[in-house]
Length: 427
Image 1 (cartoon, one colour):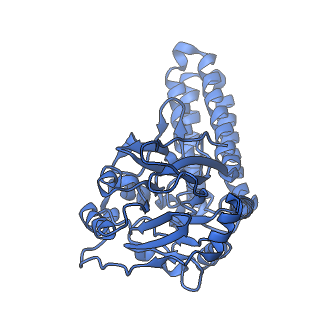
Image 2 (image 1 turned 180 degrees about the horizontal axis):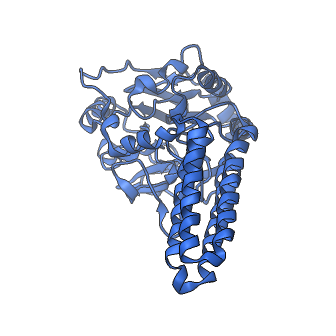
């Protein structure tokens, strides 16, 4: 019997994975995220989204008028040109945010993002006026050039890059699996952040059908932060999740805490196994044993370590251990628990990245040490997904130099002496 036939037979005959029962939190609240500075900053930036359109319009008009008055005083010969350019750029920004839901890219409010984006534009224009008496017309040209580049970046980051999902490839070895065992194709999907069923979600489902993985693993955050109480967003997220299937099943964990707000109610009735401080074990045939370890992300690392110790205590040595934890926070601890592969997301790769610097913000206590992609720490392979969706709340609904991705991990058997993790370049 050839390898392909053996693999097909194994999929048909392999028993379903059996999950252990979740452990309680021990009375400790998982709400620590609410007190983190980043979360508080997001809450503040959400305030303009609650303002009526006329308040934002008046504030913008006042800001533009103040900048024009400054130019009229310091460089009157170009003041009219600056007034016209700043007004045109503000209208162009409004058109971008108005177009996003109509193009099926993102579905957030218009006026809040418009206000927040206009602030740096007005600051640049004001700084240009302050140096205009030394630079003359060059200062005005610089202001227009900077704003034009910002507009190009906005169109790309708001309307184009967020809907271009990439497929990254990761080739791995399982030391305890026979060298001639059939490979296991595992697809990681992270950070859906569904607002509505749009172009990105439809594209994702087409890609999954074409890839036809053996196993699908979901690493959290299914609803956009601005839509946690939105019934339509929940229904559309269930529509996406219900369409996922694979021969060895679909397994999921929850995302950012508190878990109660992060989509646990999405899963009842779906053919998806939700692992909450629980594990799933399977004999896939041909000498392949797999252990999936799923933890709730509660940002109390002592509790998470205790759960991980419990889940790994009696695992077969030959089992390939895959840890599913939404954020990278357990990276320093994973090797001592014998984790072979640690799949997470949460950082979005920064979502907005700068050339030569990378992620502006990672939303992780580990900072920029682990931003995105493949890392190897003490023999443990780690993959931090850039995810699919956009954060929500006050965070900009943009992706720049950080397109969405799903990751196909191909796990092959190899002897312990020969096993060396390798990575394939992204497609």
